[in-house]
Length: 81
Length: 263
Image (cartoon, rainbow over all chains, first blue to last red; front, side, top):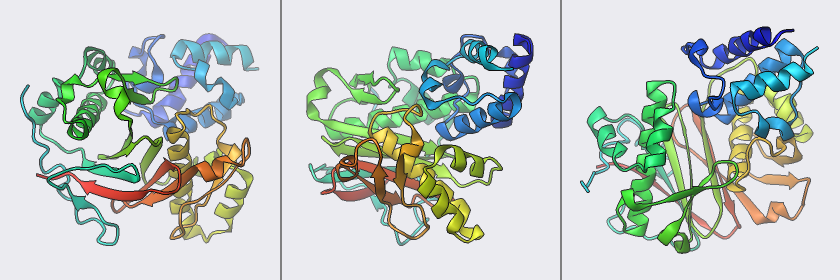
């Protein structure tokens, strides 16, 4: 899977918790939770959605390093099959 | 600085539940060492009021407000942060704009500078237009509120993030109680990690809380350190119809006072 496809999948899952957002305007280095005001509950739903779509389970210990869109793409690219 | 009254912010919610006591603010606000105050505020204010609150924010808060993607999130941030400053200013008898905040590693704010020695601890949460602020003297505190909404991923969240005994307790309930029980569990767990200044990287399935509707909120166990169960306590809050909320406080020997903000 390419980085572009991973980004598209992230937007698809993100769109479920922030349906009004034009996500293509998000900058790679925007803090996702702060920029879109995603609370803990929605964030966990987001991670579950990513797991469903990409088959990557993200352990809690790694949440801290997944702040921006760029972080997520990098992290998922290294793990997605 | 312009004096901004807190007015009618709770219109429509003040009569929400006659059983759980939300009192009007007293003339003199005293916070004892053995007290926890919770303020309930509806976030439906006039734009002009919002504009006034914006001027209470520090430069870094103004920058943070500008980063929000949606206008409504920007407004909620200005509102909740401005109100936090006003509430803390009332306890400290200081101008809200003078307060300075530092941030713990997971983003929990605390007072710094000349106010740090006052031992005021606080935490806030908001959901679906309703905010709760918890204030204590020298005790760590966490609060969470959620508007109950059905979501297909709720059970997946439970399986992935709740402890085995919580999942078992949830499944044992009749189906019509499970949604409220799910949010009881979630808000209690969230309040607990917020009180401890932790983020979601704290393993949520490593501690258990009670969850059955109508039963007291209890921290049942903490796997990493069983002593933690006696260090912390939990309390159900009733912010209004359709909402579930919980308070986590350091220690057991404290009394709760709940204030509703109105003019």
